Length: 454
Image (cartoon, rainbow, N blue to C red):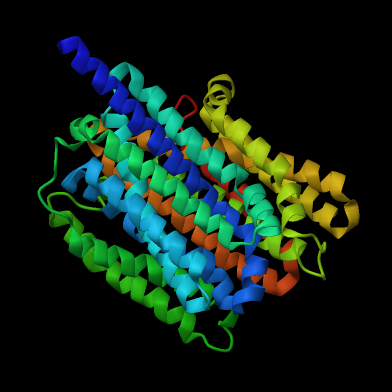
């Protein structure tokens, strides 16, 4: 009887694991597939320049602002309920986007997708990690991370292919289909997820969530307004000032609550701040490159590629990003974490130069080499930096630390879209590549704050 129950529990957790991996594959694809589809979406939905940026940033900002609360929701209501609600919302949001006929509906759907991702990502990770035996936990979390990275890496190619052959709406219908399958698997294995639901926090930090969301959204609005700082300075200074003003009560509230969203003691741990800063810079580089390369590549003034051709041209970056991110731990063991991250971020600057030469007339072969170098350069810091941030914390701080790491990573991607818009408007893709190169130099400098044996 005991043996039979144990077998059922293992089988149930298998459904939890693969359903969660399927969901994370879809979330990863969703994050980057839209980049190849944006030129077609802009033409069909008559997106403004701001609407084009917010088609990406609505998702990133909503995720950044809410992912810390999403982790607490999994603790409060249980990983089982939080996972299925988050995935269901993601599916509904995908349907809204697929059916959208105006910019407003599109942005509403993308915002809802961001909220859903903020709930689904930490809750599925909690279910996968807590529901496994101790000896299987590392493998389970590795599989979850691997599928998320796989989706993120192949997203541009999938987005380009679906847009070319079936239209951009097919991307989001596919998302909804994957989410329905994942929910079915989780529902089938609901009893196996009970172990992930045992410990619950008593209440959510709603005040902290609201204040944190105001700070993050204000910062992103300020960054988006930078191109107009000379003609309308208040559109930049106002949001920056609001973020600074709200930050004061946020820190006071978080110092008093029992389960704070932002624990200030985390930032005192050696290596935590440099690690999350490097991870954010890596995300800034990836998101800005994918967006503005696709806009350039599919334009008449640029390379004049189809969505499929633009997605295929990014395949060397995707291959390098996936392969090196999965072997990042082995690279760190051989070279040392600090050296691996510093080398990767320095290579970002070199690869950006190669891509710049390629788009200025160097040809597609040189472009492929540049993308492969950039993917390899970003993979190690993108994969290692968040892990190093969490290893700098005690086990009791891991949950809250994970929320902050994820929030900063999403915020980094949002900053890349906003700052990239300023650079792209000033001097096209070359200016965006210069911005990415500067991010690489900054990341290499920040790596000195990481212990070599981390």
